[in-house]
Length: 188
Image (tube, rainbow, N blue to C red; front, side):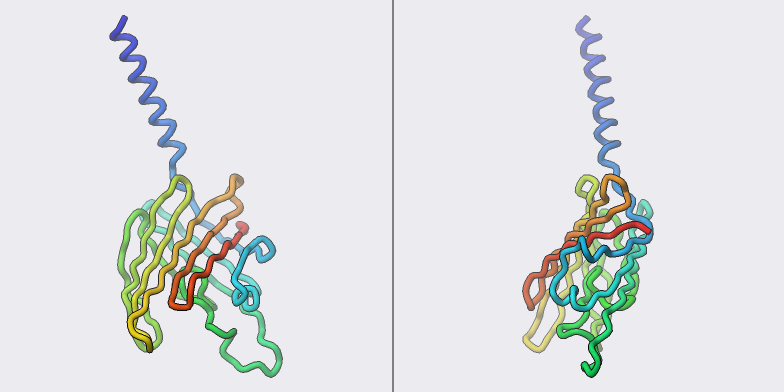
């Protein structure tokens, strides 16, 4: 009788472990995503400069590739060329225009070389799963007019229950300070 109870308890624990692991399966963010400006909480600079933004995401078991295309608001007539003050942003999704695709190895940290002006700097890129959420991070250290500077970004990606809404909470820390944004995308 005692053996049957232990055996039944072991089977129940195994079944619960399978159920829990099935619930913790990572989300798939693949697809084309359009920024919903009305639902997003952007910095003042982004509000003034972004007309529309689309992300194309390709995800495999090993990595996630993100391509971002941003259409900028046309400057007022007579305004100097070069975009809004403070530049277009860099980082994972803050960049202007159509920056080079970014590829994150899922569950790993890697270092890639990125061109910044006339220099090339190493950029640490990391990703980890937090349940169904994906946390992407970058860190770059470079020399500036005031010495060595570090800039970091952390994005937490989460799919809505319907799989058609993607919320990206972003924190960017640089010598200029800390910016936090929430971008809400809809799947096209």
